[in-house]
Image 1 (cartoon, chains in turn cyan, purple, brown, blue):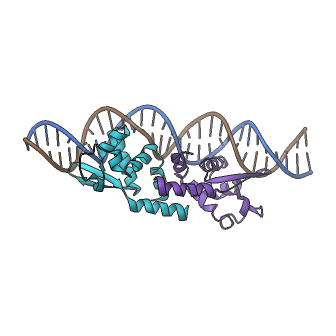
Image 2 (image 1 turned 180 degrees about the vertical axis):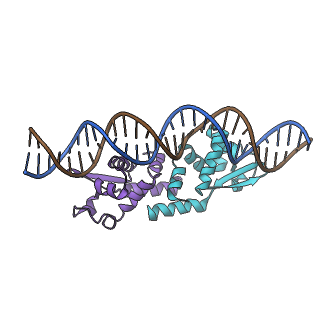
Image 3 (image 1 turned 135 degrees about the horizontal axis):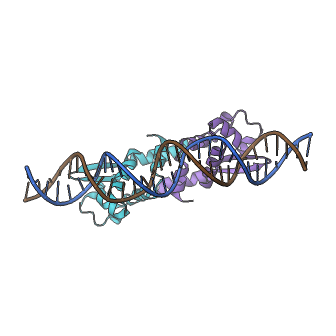
Length: 100
Length: 100
DNA sequence: TTGGTATATCGGGAAAAGTCGATATACCTT
DNA sequence: AAGGTATATCGACTTTTCCCGATATACCAA
């Protein structure tokens, strides 16, 4: 993934918020039904509700963040759970500190 | 400056290149006339030539980077010299490592 | 003060991103 | 198989960004 694509992914208020929410899922998604969502992540629907934007928009945003390696997804049944991708976030930190 | 504005400033290939060039001015701007440009920075014209984009575009890009506190400028006569703003860059690094 | 040079600002056209509703796809349940 | 739910994709419209040329501004030099 190109550096510039990572920064584009971060150039949106809602997408930054999503990353923040996923930092503390239990805090931000108290209604998440799945009990072990802490490890798997949070499903699209919960994120969509919290964001107030449409389902299609949030689905798109999540795939933008995923393409930038900032989050990762796991499909379980009809749900897709998203969580932070620590590896990608660390890589970004490295980019900032060395290449930028 | 809002986080999202900083990332927007970084969401452009040319602007990222400019930041990179300003890391090693002597290497990237051998034709810079001013002898002590290493400390003051590089003037707009040199950056414009290297970028291949128009004068107005580069002037705009530099002010976008400056608004994001990523670079700073010094006016000397008819020239404006731009250099990296270490403080802003460190703040960004901190944002990535703590808030993101 | 008249030009000349460097940079900034303005106005605009093209491309990309934001965002939606509608629809498609995938999966689950009965 | 049929219907229901969750997510993804599509098509469209609006807003923002990209990038230009033209013009304005600031400064310098003769």
